Length: 289
Image (tube, rainbow, N blue to C red; front, side, top):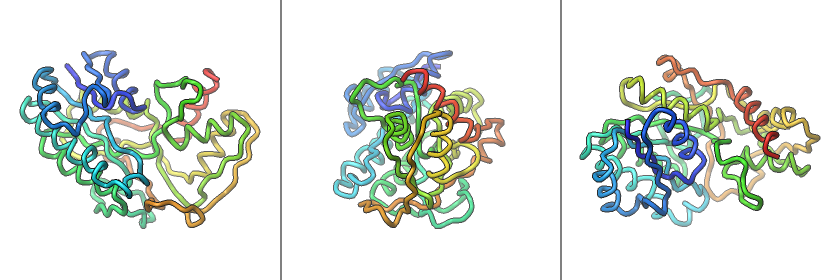
Protein backbone atom coordinates (compact mmCIF):
# COMPACT_ATOMS: atom_id res chain seq x y z
CA UNK A 1 0.00 0.00 0.00
CA UNK A 2 0.89 3.63 -0.34
CA UNK A 3 0.14 5.29 2.99
CA UNK A 4 -0.01 9.00 3.80
CA UNK A 5 0.56 9.84 7.48
CA UNK A 6 -0.30 13.31 8.80
CA UNK A 7 0.98 14.88 12.01
CA UNK A 8 4.21 12.92 11.65
CA UNK A 9 5.98 15.07 14.24
CA UNK A 10 3.83 13.62 17.03
CA UNK A 11 4.60 10.52 19.06
CA UNK A 12 1.71 8.42 17.76
CA UNK A 13 2.01 9.28 14.07
CA UNK A 14 5.79 8.80 14.27
CA UNK A 15 5.32 5.29 15.67
CA UNK A 16 2.59 4.42 13.17
CA UNK A 17 4.69 5.61 10.22
CA UNK A 18 7.68 3.58 11.41
CA UNK A 19 5.55 0.45 11.71
CA UNK A 20 3.89 0.92 8.30
CA UNK A 21 7.27 1.41 6.61
CA UNK A 22 8.09 -2.23 7.33
CA UNK A 23 5.83 -3.36 4.48
CA UNK A 24 4.45 -0.28 2.77
CA UNK A 25 5.41 2.92 1.01
CA UNK A 26 4.88 5.73 3.51
CA UNK A 27 4.69 9.49 3.03
CA UNK A 28 5.07 11.14 6.45
CA UNK A 29 4.06 14.78 6.69
CA UNK A 30 4.47 17.04 9.70
CA UNK A 31 2.14 19.93 10.42
CA UNK A 32 4.60 22.32 8.74
CA UNK A 33 4.49 20.14 5.63
CA UNK A 34 0.71 19.74 5.62
CA UNK A 35 -1.49 22.01 7.72
CA UNK A 36 -4.94 20.43 7.94
CA UNK A 37 -6.54 23.83 8.39
CA UNK A 38 -5.60 24.66 4.78
CA UNK A 39 -8.31 22.82 2.88
CA UNK A 40 -6.96 23.32 -0.63
CA UNK A 41 -3.49 22.19 0.42
CA UNK A 42 -4.96 18.99 1.85
CA UNK A 43 -6.86 18.26 -1.34
CA UNK A 44 -3.85 19.04 -3.55
CA UNK A 45 -1.42 16.87 -1.58
CA UNK A 46 -3.76 13.88 -1.39
CA UNK A 47 -4.63 14.10 -5.10
CA UNK A 48 -0.95 14.32 -5.99
CA UNK A 49 0.11 11.38 -3.79
CA UNK A 50 -2.92 9.15 -4.52
CA UNK A 51 -2.53 7.09 -1.32
CA UNK A 52 -4.38 3.87 -0.65
CA UNK A 53 -4.74 4.87 2.99
CA UNK A 54 -4.57 8.11 4.96
CA UNK A 55 -3.64 7.85 8.63
CA UNK A 56 -4.42 11.03 10.53
CA UNK A 57 -2.15 11.57 13.51
CA UNK A 58 -2.56 15.35 13.53
CA UNK A 59 -4.53 16.87 16.38
CA UNK A 60 -4.93 19.91 18.60
CA UNK A 61 -4.26 18.26 21.97
CA UNK A 62 -4.08 21.23 24.36
CA UNK A 63 -7.16 20.34 26.40
CA UNK A 64 -7.10 23.46 28.57
CA UNK A 65 -5.98 25.70 25.71
CA UNK A 66 -9.04 24.67 23.73
CA UNK A 67 -11.25 26.28 26.38
CA UNK A 68 -9.64 29.63 25.55
CA UNK A 69 -9.43 29.02 21.80
CA UNK A 70 -12.12 26.56 20.71
CA UNK A 71 -11.87 27.82 17.13
CA UNK A 72 -8.28 26.58 16.86
CA UNK A 73 -9.28 23.17 18.24
CA UNK A 74 -12.20 22.91 15.83
CA UNK A 75 -10.06 23.92 12.87
CA UNK A 76 -7.73 20.94 13.33
CA UNK A 77 -9.77 18.32 15.18
CA UNK A 78 -13.00 18.75 13.24
CA UNK A 79 -12.66 20.65 9.97
CA UNK A 80 -9.16 19.31 9.32
CA UNK A 81 -10.60 15.80 9.53
CA UNK A 82 -13.40 16.82 7.17
CA UNK A 83 -10.81 17.96 4.62
CA UNK A 84 -9.02 14.61 4.89
CA UNK A 85 -12.29 12.70 4.59
CA UNK A 86 -13.28 14.58 1.46
CA UNK A 87 -9.82 14.04 0.00
CA UNK A 88 -10.08 10.35 0.84
CA UNK A 89 -13.43 10.11 -0.97
CA UNK A 90 -11.96 11.89 -4.01
CA UNK A 91 -9.05 9.42 -4.22
CA UNK A 92 -10.88 6.32 -2.93
CA UNK A 93 -8.51 6.05 0.01
CA UNK A 94 -9.40 4.58 3.39
CA UNK A 95 -9.13 7.03 6.29
CA UNK A 96 -7.75 5.99 9.68
CA UNK A 97 -8.49 8.66 12.27
CA UNK A 98 -7.49 8.68 15.93
CA UNK A 99 -9.97 9.97 18.48
CA UNK A 100 -10.14 9.99 22.27
CA UNK A 101 -11.84 8.78 25.43
CA UNK A 102 -12.68 12.43 26.15
CA UNK A 103 -15.80 12.10 23.98
CA UNK A 104 -17.40 10.45 27.04
CA UNK A 105 -18.47 12.24 30.23
CA UNK A 106 -16.68 9.93 32.69
CA UNK A 107 -19.78 9.16 34.75
CA UNK A 108 -19.83 5.42 34.02
CA UNK A 109 -18.72 2.60 36.29
CA UNK A 110 -17.95 0.09 33.52
CA UNK A 111 -15.64 0.50 30.51
CA UNK A 112 -17.25 2.38 27.64
CA UNK A 113 -17.92 0.39 24.49
CA UNK A 114 -18.18 1.66 20.93
CA UNK A 115 -21.96 1.63 21.38
CA UNK A 116 -21.84 3.92 24.43
CA UNK A 117 -23.36 7.36 23.82
CA UNK A 118 -20.75 10.16 23.76
CA UNK A 119 -21.29 13.17 25.97
CA UNK A 120 -18.27 15.50 25.64
CA UNK A 121 -17.62 17.91 28.51
CA UNK A 122 -15.05 20.32 27.07
CA UNK A 123 -14.28 22.30 23.92
CA UNK A 124 -11.49 19.85 23.07
CA UNK A 125 -13.80 16.86 23.52
CA UNK A 126 -16.52 18.45 21.37
CA UNK A 127 -14.04 19.14 18.58
CA UNK A 128 -12.86 15.52 18.65
CA UNK A 129 -16.39 14.14 18.51
CA UNK A 130 -17.27 16.33 15.55
CA UNK A 131 -14.08 15.10 13.91
CA UNK A 132 -15.35 11.54 14.33
CA UNK A 133 -18.58 12.49 12.58
CA UNK A 134 -16.71 14.06 9.67
CA UNK A 135 -14.42 11.02 9.35
CA UNK A 136 -17.46 8.88 8.59
CA UNK A 137 -17.89 10.71 5.26
CA UNK A 138 -15.11 8.44 3.91
CA UNK A 139 -14.39 4.73 4.17
CA UNK A 140 -13.07 4.90 7.70
CA UNK A 141 -11.59 3.36 10.79
CA UNK A 142 -11.88 5.57 13.86
CA UNK A 143 -9.54 4.39 16.60
CA UNK A 144 -10.20 5.88 20.02
CA UNK A 145 -7.00 5.93 22.07
CA UNK A 146 -6.38 7.04 25.62
CA UNK A 147 -3.52 8.37 27.77
CA UNK A 148 -0.94 7.74 25.05
CA UNK A 149 2.65 7.11 26.06
CA UNK A 150 5.97 5.99 24.61
CA UNK A 151 7.01 5.78 21.00
CA UNK A 152 9.93 5.94 18.62
CA UNK A 153 10.84 9.51 19.55
CA UNK A 154 12.88 8.18 22.49
CA UNK A 155 15.45 9.27 23.42
CA UNK A 156 14.23 12.84 23.63
CA UNK A 157 16.64 15.68 23.21
CA UNK A 158 17.69 17.27 26.47
CA UNK A 159 15.28 20.01 27.46
CA UNK A 160 12.53 18.77 25.17
CA UNK A 161 9.20 18.31 26.90
CA UNK A 162 7.79 14.81 26.66
CA UNK A 163 4.36 14.62 25.16
CA UNK A 164 2.31 12.60 27.61
CA UNK A 165 1.47 12.35 31.28
CA UNK A 166 3.14 8.96 31.73
CA UNK A 167 6.26 10.16 29.92
CA UNK A 168 6.49 13.10 32.33
CA UNK A 169 5.91 10.81 35.32
CA UNK A 170 8.81 8.67 34.12
CA UNK A 171 10.98 11.79 33.79
CA UNK A 172 10.19 12.77 37.37
CA UNK A 173 10.86 9.29 38.76
CA UNK A 174 14.20 9.05 36.95
CA UNK A 175 15.15 12.51 38.19
CA UNK A 176 14.24 11.63 41.79
CA UNK A 177 11.47 14.18 41.84
CA UNK A 178 8.08 14.05 43.52
CA UNK A 179 5.21 12.65 41.45
CA UNK A 180 1.55 13.51 41.95
CA UNK A 181 -0.92 10.90 40.68
CA UNK A 182 -4.71 10.75 40.65
CA UNK A 183 -6.26 8.07 42.83
CA UNK A 184 -9.75 8.65 41.42
CA UNK A 185 -9.19 8.84 37.67
CA UNK A 186 -9.46 5.45 35.97
CA UNK A 187 -7.93 4.86 32.53
CA UNK A 188 -7.02 2.21 29.96
CA UNK A 189 -3.78 3.71 28.58
CA UNK A 190 -2.55 3.19 25.02
CA UNK A 191 1.10 2.38 24.32
CA UNK A 192 1.91 3.91 20.93
CA UNK A 193 3.85 0.83 19.77
CA UNK A 194 0.77 -1.33 20.41
CA UNK A 195 -1.51 1.18 18.67
CA UNK A 196 0.83 1.24 15.66
CA UNK A 197 0.78 -2.57 15.45
CA UNK A 198 -3.02 -2.67 15.73
CA UNK A 199 -3.34 -0.02 13.01
CA UNK A 200 -1.14 -2.02 10.63
CA UNK A 201 -3.09 -5.23 11.26
CA UNK A 202 -6.41 -3.42 10.87
CA UNK A 203 -5.47 -2.02 7.46
CA UNK A 204 -4.15 -5.39 6.33
CA UNK A 205 -7.19 -7.38 7.44
CA UNK A 206 -9.81 -4.85 6.25
CA UNK A 207 -12.60 -5.53 8.77
CA UNK A 208 -15.91 -3.65 8.64
CA UNK A 209 -15.41 0.09 8.88
CA UNK A 210 -16.39 1.90 12.06
CA UNK A 211 -15.18 2.88 15.52
CA UNK A 212 -12.76 0.71 17.50
CA UNK A 213 -11.32 1.29 20.96
CA UNK A 214 -7.56 0.84 20.64
CA UNK A 215 -6.46 0.78 24.29
CA UNK A 216 -4.57 -1.51 26.62
CA UNK A 217 -6.40 -4.36 28.27
CA UNK A 218 -7.31 -3.95 31.96
CA UNK A 219 -7.87 -0.63 33.68
CA UNK A 220 -6.22 1.24 36.52
CA UNK A 221 -5.94 4.58 38.24
CA UNK A 222 -3.07 6.95 37.57
CA UNK A 223 -1.79 5.98 41.02
CA UNK A 224 -1.69 2.35 39.84
CA UNK A 225 0.20 3.33 36.69
CA UNK A 226 2.72 5.50 38.51
CA UNK A 227 3.43 2.82 41.13
CA UNK A 228 3.91 0.11 38.50
CA UNK A 229 6.16 2.38 36.43
CA UNK A 230 8.30 3.24 39.45
CA UNK A 231 8.72 -0.44 40.30
CA UNK A 232 9.71 -1.26 36.71
CA UNK A 233 12.19 1.63 36.59
CA UNK A 234 13.70 0.31 39.84
CA UNK A 235 14.12 3.79 41.27
CA UNK A 236 13.09 5.18 44.67
CA UNK A 237 9.99 7.26 44.16
CA UNK A 238 7.83 9.75 45.99
CA UNK A 239 4.34 9.31 44.62
CA UNK A 240 1.83 11.66 46.23
CA UNK A 241 -1.83 10.61 45.91
CA UNK A 242 -4.16 13.40 44.80
CA UNK A 243 -7.82 13.64 43.82
CA UNK A 244 -9.15 15.36 40.74
CA UNK A 245 -11.20 17.82 42.78
CA UNK A 246 -8.00 19.20 44.29
CA UNK A 247 -6.59 20.22 40.91
CA UNK A 248 -7.60 23.48 39.30
CA UNK A 249 -8.02 22.39 35.68
CA UNK A 250 -9.69 24.72 33.21
CA UNK A 251 -11.25 21.94 31.12
CA UNK A 252 -13.31 19.18 32.65
CA UNK A 253 -11.78 15.70 32.36
CA UNK A 254 -13.74 12.45 32.36
CA UNK A 255 -13.10 10.82 35.75
CA UNK A 256 -13.89 7.22 34.82
CA UNK A 257 -12.73 6.93 31.24
CA UNK A 258 -11.82 3.26 30.80
CA UNK A 259 -12.62 1.93 27.33
CA UNK A 260 -13.45 -1.64 26.37
CA UNK A 261 -11.35 -3.14 23.56
CA UNK A 262 -13.55 -6.24 23.16
CA UNK A 263 -14.63 -5.23 19.64
CA UNK A 264 -11.00 -5.05 18.50
CA UNK A 265 -10.30 -8.38 20.21
CA UNK A 266 -13.16 -9.95 18.24
CA UNK A 267 -11.12 -9.27 15.10
CA UNK A 268 -8.17 -11.16 16.55
CA UNK A 269 -6.33 -7.96 17.48
CA UNK A 270 -5.49 -8.54 21.14
CA UNK A 271 -4.13 -5.48 22.95
CA UNK A 272 -1.64 -6.29 25.74
CA UNK A 273 -2.44 -5.26 29.29
CA UNK A 274 -1.34 -1.82 30.37
CA UNK A 275 0.94 -3.49 32.93
CA UNK A 276 2.76 -5.32 30.14
CA UNK A 277 2.95 -2.15 28.06
CA UNK A 278 4.30 -0.07 30.95
CA UNK A 279 6.92 -2.74 31.66
CA UNK A 280 8.11 -2.67 28.03
CA UNK A 281 8.09 1.11 28.08
CA UNK A 282 10.16 1.20 31.28
CA UNK A 283 12.72 -1.15 29.74
CA UNK A 284 12.97 1.16 26.72
CA UNK A 285 13.44 4.19 28.96
CA UNK A 286 16.20 2.49 30.96
CA UNK A 287 18.00 1.66 27.74
CA UNK A 288 18.23 5.30 26.70
CA UNK A 289 18.78 7.09 30.02
